Image 1 (tube, rainbow, N blue to C red):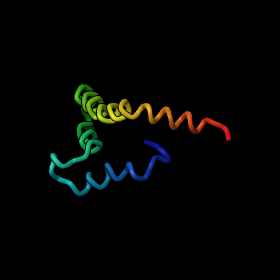
Image 2: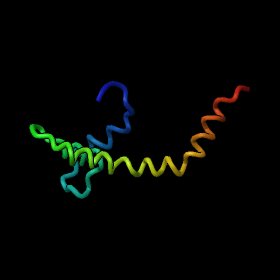
Image 3: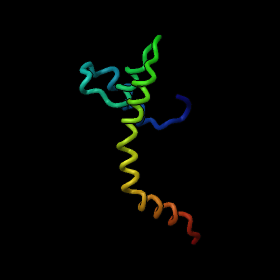
Length: 79
């Protein structure tokens, strides 16, 4: 991870990583971070976790695509 990513996204990793000890209460980024081993990488489980965690934003985008396109086209009009 580099540079200037949004400050709010770090709240999804750092604070729960430090404060929460119960695995059932962890956020998705922390759960994916814990799947990533230090010496052994279990790429199958890691990629399955990434795929599953990307489904809700994808569904949200599909249902709001009309609004997304409408906003893009409204911003492109001069005047």
